Image (tube, rainbow over all chains, first blue to last red; front, top):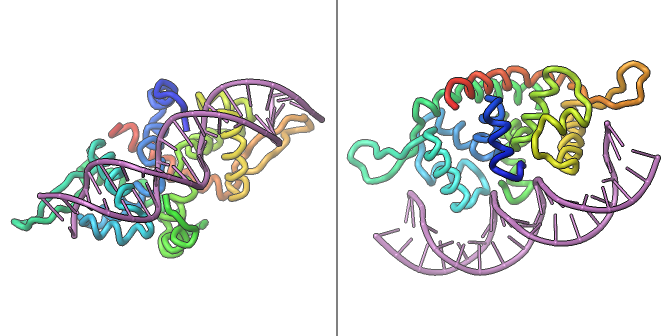
Length: 108
Length: 108
DNA sequence: CGGCATCCTACGCGATACTG
DNA sequence: CAGTATCGCGTAGGATGCCG
């Protein structure tokens, strides 16, 4: 929404909500996080869950979330495949997601 | 994010979080709501608070939020000027915003 | 399966100017 | 002050194809 990085920074510097909005301010990040909060997921599982998402978008979002340290890649056991797992910081979102679920059920 | 309305509907139908994400899935709606949660605000006050937003974007977002019945226009007292006030449905967001503020302070 | 690279379009949004 | 109207650009993101 905001044109320059500076303007965005002004908002974020003073307001924790702006920082969160910056992080989660697109609909699909929330959905990815919702899934991962349940359990680690593979790329294809996320793809299937987020109906209509393109691989391009999914990889991009995952990269951002990884860069922000909300999740990281893991390889369970000695298997070759990759999974996406929430970090502690990622699990911290549980409260927000929980409130959203409650709100959605009640009002939407 | 999702191409067709149908695909979006598929997600929303089954998941309350998807519905919320759909509603709040852009950074500036959250900021507007954050302000209004505190008290009713005038157009210019919002404009000033959301550094860098254009009148066009602000009016558009307000229209959407009004259409979704999260807020409505009011005219306090017998004054001429308009204010934006949260509805009950809008106030219901308090829990989510509260969690976001807590998360932002702790992790971001 | 789990991506990455390219191409291309829709549209979100800022800038600007005008109205009541 | 509280918007509406028009224009024009940047970019998010879909489609497609290729690779290890």
